Length: 183
Image (cartoon, rainbow, N blue to C red; front, side):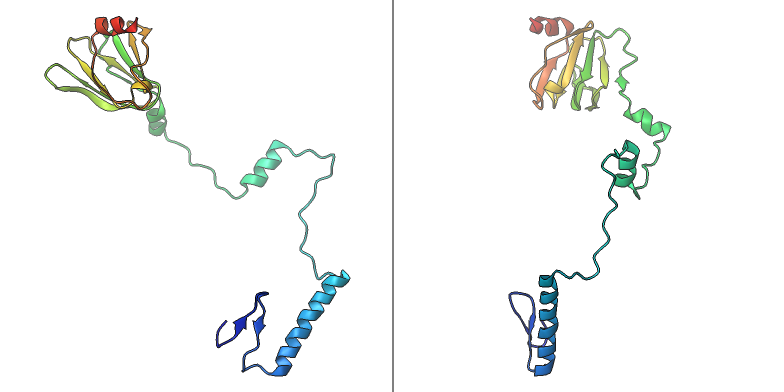
């Protein structure tokens, strides 16, 4: 409170030296009249109540939708390019003789290198994406989410390469080696 007034615990202002005794008395009378009106049960203008449904009237899904979402604009329509990006992608489609397919069960970062260290693929495979591994010797896999990948050899799914979120390095992408670790 400005100018030296103090506030009591109930929130009313204590009179300052600038207030006269009559101003203080008038304020106290108004406050006590309000208390008396509350005690006697009289009410000032009440706030309007929300409309109430009849007890036998069941709200419809459309009623609830309109009530909950009134005033919220609709989401913009996605264009064809955005929709296409959201579809699962198949990488390495040119590898028609591929025996190994990496399929993402969860988003998984993968990197495939050849024997000389050249990158053949480095990317995040999104859930549903797949990569057809070239049918060539000495390829290795590095992944940041071993449990998020399904490895298939000749169409046969293999056990997980590790737990979800586990980083695995230097996994041989040789079909014979992968099938040997299956059993």
